[in-house]
Length: 379
Image (tube, rainbow, N blue to C red):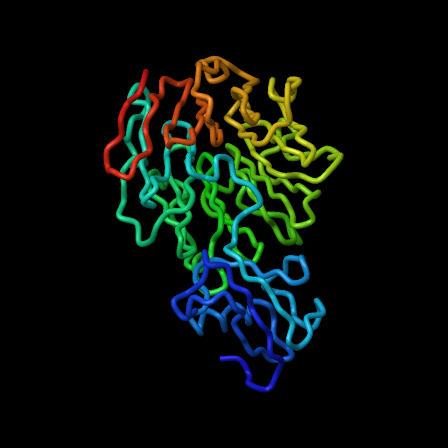
């Protein structure tokens, strides 16, 4: 418990992260903090009071406060009112509910379980990446690597399964601990990255290209993406993108970006950014750097190994880049698309009714339902 001689704060807690210690009223919760406390100390006191659960973010006067910041340094004064919200990364393609790896696909069902399927003409389920493990908590978001699967759980932990030849499934013990809860996870070919509620990034697995070694002084991160052998991070200022890892095609050399960034996505030899004005910028090698003209503002982007997918609201997805397996040949889709994802040589679209459509790499289309089975829609 914090020192009792300090300052009194009031916390407006969003019901999505409210604990069972909150009586259900919409009034603020009083919390006492020492004069030298950090924002994270206040969060842990609210946890002790069972007022909040899961990863959360704190805002004051419209500005996000990082857990490592001291209350005195950011100017929070006695009897200030802070807002506590469930922590979500800046933007994740399709809300993180679907993911495409090199040899398999994954999706989060409405009940928080994870469903995976594979291309039986390739490796199939050789490494068990499509097994459905018993998760200790509901999955909020899923990611797929070459032959492993990772998901970010509601309680802030990360769970991985499948191929572990480089340690990509060995989640560090610190992830999910108090003050170190994960809010996003992504998977490269043989490595995994987690974004923590503190804005820190933790990587594990293959580091032959430096993809598991974020640059020193990276700063507070709000969104991450893993390519085949490199990683990308969007910082809290909304304008800075940092990349590290393999750079043979200059995929880590970020160009000047004309405005704030909404979302980033990394492929095999390229990185793509969605800008606040709806524009798209792509750098690195291959055909993906030739971004097409769009008929409307883009609302979401996703990078496959050598192609990209863009989602334009109320319009069919637009794909560009390598089309060796039909990953850029968009089929006729229902009108109500909720988001897109890409990986390997496959593209996917999540529909508002929960249907998952995919094209390229001979993957089939499925329904993400609350049951343990899936229904094939088309080949």
